[in-house]
Length: 289
Image 1 (cartoon, rainbow, N blue to C red):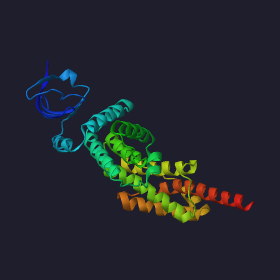
Image 2 (cartoon, one colour):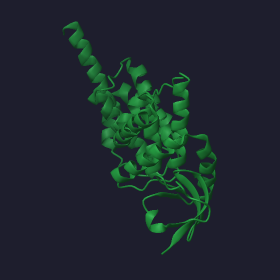
Image 3 (cartoon, rainbow, N blue to C red):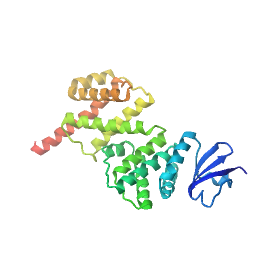
Image 4 (cartoon, rainbow, N blue to C red):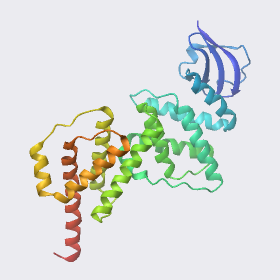
């Protein structure tokens, strides 16, 4: 039966080993390094439920990271990644072991030093990535329990973006860029309408979801069917909201460097007009009209 050979024990949960197909690998698993010595053989059948970092660059990064973090954190992150794998039908990019361990380790250090980091895009992240947000809630709850800390809810949003990155195979910077961009566009809408959209409202959810789908369509290179009649109607009936929608698409083009189809302006105008109408209705109620 094939087996891996222990080359070095980093701690109770992480070893470096020689793999029959992948040469040197980093193997992560609860208790995998306990009482192990160099040249020990470990059956591959017992490693199947563990994580093997095969990418050379990922291996080197993880080797450098492990000595700097609490061994208990390695274990709880492994549990979290297993939970993500079991809860999702998508494959998980192995970089999450490094990214999540490093992020949480730094977050705990900040927490201990009473250095709060506010997450201004928490609501956007929750709306854009609801499933990943729920997984992040589980992750932060497990970390708080296992590490004896009380990380704030802001961390749920940060962890959710790491999970999105791992499941979508996109770099965390791209995922974060989209959340920031949507947050900036919501602020632009609110400034132009002079209206604060309640963050727990259906209106907010609709707007953020629509903006997310615009970005996703652009990322995938999908075209949007042109509707010249709708475009003409929106421009004629709702000129102010049409102009605001046009501004938003220009912001998107400048930030993601991809041209936005004109039809997106029309569909976005519909959402903006609904918000403008909502603001007007609320003003009428306050004045008793």
